[in-house]
Amino acid sequence: MKFGLMTQIQMPRPWTDTTERNGYWNALEQGVAAEAAGFEYFWITEQHFLIEIGHCPSPDMFLAALSQRTTTLRLGLGVVLLPLHNPFYAAERVATLDVLSNGRAEFGTGRGTTPYVVEGLGFDPTEGREVGREALEAIMKMYDNEFFLGFKGAKFDLPARHVVPRPIQRPHPPLWVAATNLETFEHAGRQGFGVIGVTRNTPAETKAAIDAYRAAIRAADPASLVARKPNNQVAVFGITCCDPDDRVGRDTACAAARWYYGDNDAELNHARFATAGGVAKVRERIAAMTNDELIANGMAIGGNPDTICRQVEKWAEIGLDQMVFMIQAGNTTHDQVMRSIDLIGEKVIPRFTTAELALSA
Image (cartoon, rainbow, N blue to C red; front, side):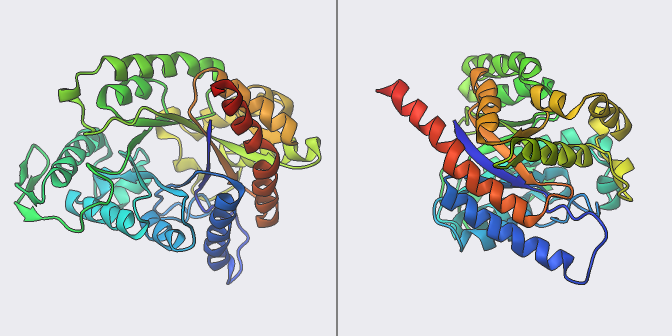
């Protein structure tokens, strides 16, 4: 089992003149602490316009800064919203991050499903899937050869050009796709992508999707894969808090999860979760559960280190490769985030490393 940390740089109101500045610098400090604690991955989302919910429109710039403060941490773009970017631009930015990090970039992709974001940038959300598919196809061709021979499709007509810099990881950084719906898992396997899901679905609900993913990636014709090098990995992220006091950890994680899933008065809360039936539907499902039920169902990951370990074990049992903790969420403070990172590094990650070593002995 590998472990990752995820952030959207959330900033619930009220704000001060330094809130946004502190949010960015705190996130950098959290990334450095994660590497020291034994985390292998750091993921950051791409968000536009969604004040309070996510203040990270340029995740590649953030990860470039983090790359200069770390040496081993894998730097995950989780995810680049491809329909919102010219394919040349996306290929160049990902490769630049790979160069600056000495080959530590992870290239997650998505199509963008929030009309408020997509329309705000001048695109049609109904065309996102096809535009994203063509964009990634073109980007893969850019990484195939020193000189890109051009691409012509229904959405893009790109001329032949030198695309620089070249990524350090060849043929390209590992590819991932975001999977807010369980049906996406199998599709990701057929393309050779790693898949990043969410604990909004319980381990029991997710198991069939992981099984379908594994079957699809095993059966896929190598010649038909979008990924030139398959990335056979499944990750999920969950809202998390680890605290020495089990009740404090549980309640803090659940408060953050409820905020993240829509129990908040953020101005743009209504614009979220388009593919899950809207924020009202998601919030209704979460509101029907007690805090302990949220923990038991895996929809929040919280408690003391022993409780966190038992939750991670449930995900490991269904074949998960990477557990991604989203600790900076809702009104969780920077001090609480740092304490969680330290505790997970001290008391959670070593248990799984020890278990894996015992199994391989």
